[in-house]
Image 1 (cartoon, protein in one colour):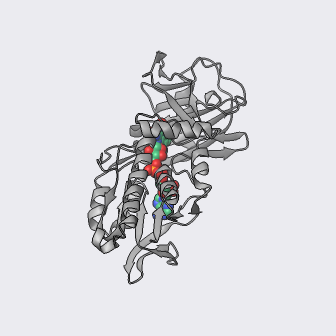
Image 2 (cartoon, helix red, strand yellow):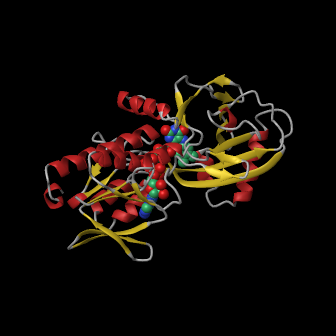
Image 3 (spheres, protein in one colour):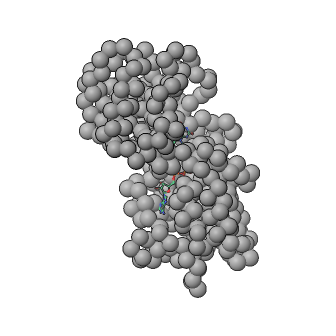
Length: 333
Ligand SMILES: Cc1cc2nc3c(=O)[nH]c(=O)nc-3n(C[C@H](O)[C@H](O)[C@H](O)COP(=O)(O)OP(=O)(O)OC[C@H]3O[C@@H](n4cnc5c(N)ncnc54)[C@H](O)[C@@H]3O)c2cc1C
């Protein structure tokens, strides 16, 4: 059975790992320079900084086991910080929070190391041909033909890939609204003396701030902060310049603690599709369309790391069943 997975975020990699354990050999295509998707980190001269997913929680026992396994493999750790509601400094909801360690992309790298991941390949077309599903990159070059294709791109990107081959799946993807997020990494020349390690500002442009060095495995000097704008502010300023966003977020951060801020460097990233505002909550964990096309990812389930992981696995289990039953894609669709 020839299997392709589009996307090497946590959903695509969780699927890939399970498929590979089952003796299937998925080919994974990732448009980015490395695996991780929204669980990635940005390298700076002063060290890596996590500009995407900040932490994950584990509600379900299967995922808890997976997290314990990652901790044993030294690619994840519990983050002991208690985020505060700011500026009041009231503790936010108590729950166990985990991070990949020493940077957010480590879990993805760990999962990807035994998989056939082709990075910097953006699948631009999925076409039904005599040989199966033919995937083509942005130059129109075929990158392979497959019996089954699992798409784990964020909903709007999945929608455009699916418009031709599966209008029904494309319509489901189109029904999911994804919220943007402007994310800023702040590298400081001197310590802030801030009396919190992480927090949810209750007003203004910022929705989240975290001291990078409070996260397991990260250096505490130089002091670095991750600032996330709220979805509403990010939407309003989606086409603003990186410079103006940087200035606005630094100003908002300055207002959260006393004392001057000595900014040494900044790194900014605009996530157009950061979080699913209206995930499908699909009970199966994945979507199945015509003749061997499947979708998984956070938008199919619940919009979080744990949900994305479950979704990828659920799709993989379905593919393993199909492989064991030797169901041809046309029967399965
Ligand atoms: C700023 C931010 C903060 C967040 N905070 C949290 C948090 O605190 N806790 C939490 O649980 N979750 C958080 N999330 C959400 C979490 O990151 C996601 O739910 C999860 O990582 C989604 O995983 P995924 O595999 O479904 O999608 P992704 O990680 O988006 O992976 C999809 C992959 O597909 C690739 N791709 C897309 N199109 C193509 C194509 N045509 N060809 C090839 N490759 C393609 C992309 O490059 C990407 O790598 C946050 C997200 C962001 C952006």
